[in-house]
Image 1 (cartoon, rainbow, N blue to C red):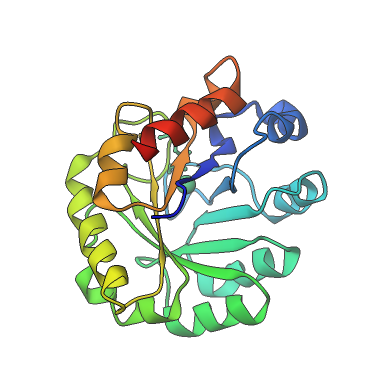
Image 2: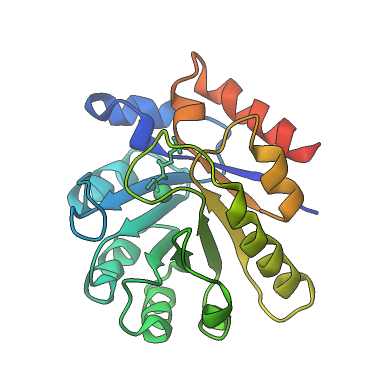
Length: 218
Ligand code: DX5
Ligand code: ZN
């Protein structure tokens, strides 16, 4: 299979030094930006103005993970700003098929995320319209939580749907990924690994990225 992709989450970085923190993750495939609205999840992070500012100081493709209510209204702005992949939550989207079409028309990849308790099967038809499936391996809202291995059944099911040609998706995982957990996730069929604390708590984030990639390739 293809080289594992690593997407550092800047949620674990120093928000007072965001440009430097982007420069510290050389070798990242994507940079993962967690947008939280204090409604869909009980935490508030950053929004469009900060994303627009960050897009100006990095060439790393940006992966915007929108943990917000009413993504039908707000997600398009992130695509138009130049985000590479814009992920919305299945639990929050009103018309996810139309939303995916709008994101693609604005030039972005369309991502759909499911929380740990959300089953995959009801979303398989909708996922035909998406480029990315983001499987949450913690309850969304905070970094630094423990990986939930039970979500790997959904990863395996998604991998099968992709490998049998029923879906054409990149399978992404988010939450609790570190050098201990990444191997399990890789074996289950993940293509792209989000990691926040495992990368930004390291002395050298760029080396932590390579360590994760090596571990996922084993
Ligand atoms: C949690 C966010 C994650 C978070 C992951 O709601 O979606 O992207 O930053 O952080 P770690 O890797 O520390 O679990
Ligand atoms: Zn995230």
